[in-house]
Length: 505
Image (cartoon, rainbow, N blue to C red; front, side, top):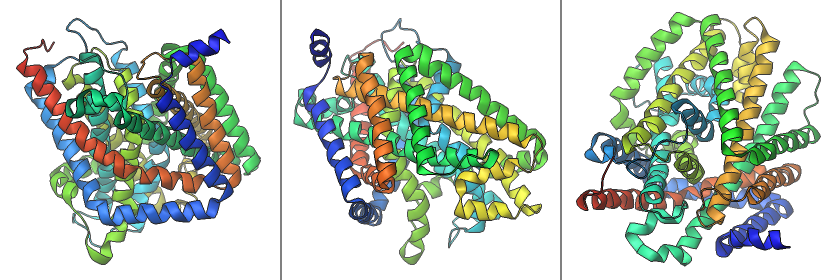
């Protein structure tokens, strides 16, 4: 009893109970009225994308150009912490955790899928005329490169600055401090934190649910394991079990170690396909498409497709922008937590430039390998990309030797990515609902890890995962508004720091 009271002392009641109430309400709606929930959230999301697509485009572009300005400006020398603070993690450990939280699993799946989708079903009117393959890679870089990472940087940098530099809570509410002052501790701040907590849990839960289906599909290719809900529930249970173990081990012995292991596995898979695949074609297309991407960056950043040709942009660019924006509180809070002691310039380089370079390399290797395999006679790859994209990478690997071994490595890679996502998601929710405490009790973190798994299993069995994913995407609009405020607040905060003559290093 005394221990429970001690745990309650670490909770921020309005945020904790408000988040729990919203989660339970959504869970009941998605479970008891699955079809209605799916249709309702789909209508809401489509309405948002149609009427506010321009706002998503401006928000993503604004985030990119703001953080690039901050990196090259004198603000870049400001240290996230006291002048003598040192980074908590090595550069490699830090980057592996950033990358795993940001989009590790997605790249594993879409590295083969997205470039081929853009070749097989190109945009109705191509903005850039540089050949089908260059266009396919360019749009893949565009959707997974600078813009999503800039969105993450804006949230994470703002939180890092106001927490480590100004002593404010490590919670989304702190991004609004220069605008509303101490009112961040009232209803506005509570509402902001609740939105981000619920969005994080739903995002992780939907990833776990769909990830279990994808892992199941992969395992069924290399074994006799049945593709079924029972198998997927078992997979979610196993992943949640490993995630809770990682929670108990702590940040240094849990997420950090798993992220480093996963990076080694990812590099091994990348090198295997690079060496065994069309190496020269990969290098040539990567260089050429990177040039096209950078050359047309300004055009693509602000381009909006009008009228009847806008559906492609809704299905791809606007879908991605709303997803990255809705995912940004999770990645932003997590990267802020692990970034004390780095300068603004180091933070932006490590969370924007290095991951974008990794995206370009990954998309080039797997995208070109997939296209070359298809052109070389692997016709089933196109069918798999269209109907069962979760199997695309496994289908490609069958074109190379040691297929079973690499499929096992791929499945292990994906599984560990989901474990780190669940663990880091529970850490973020715990920090936010504990009033911005960067080191909340592990018992509460354990609760959030179990809640993520429980929500995923419940909605998977009820068929409500699609509804939950659409609801998560719909949260992108209020998060985009928050992102605009965060950018303005961060700039004002940095200007204030400079004008007061605070030490920057």
